[in-house]
Length: 131
Image (tube, rainbow, N blue to C red; front, side, top):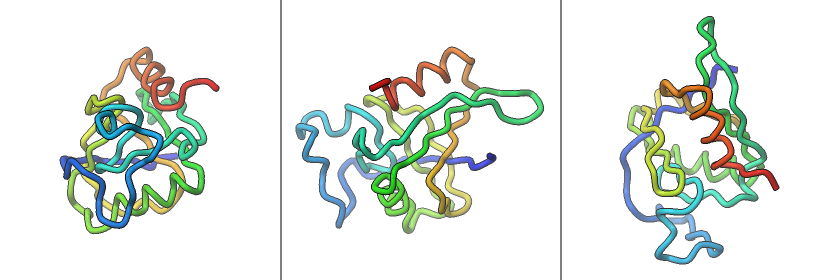
């Protein structure tokens, strides 16, 4: 799988038409969990997050697999942002800001960025902690 999510700097709030996640208090909406392009992804939006290795050099990356609700949110996050950066935050920390070079239509994205094996594994656990 070579789907790369290149992400960005965007607005601080939820885009019009996507309600804030009611499970998160307003003060924590930009800090807790996974946020892509200003949109919160609830635990139920994420089927899994795993460390995988890409290319001949076997560089570690994190692959996020969305549930159907997460796929819909991710599709919305991409609208009108082709060739823009899409900011990916986990617990308030920017983990990637790649450029969206083409629309990603599936239910998986891959975040790469020079992670060590340990960093990629830890990030995957932060995105989708064991249940």
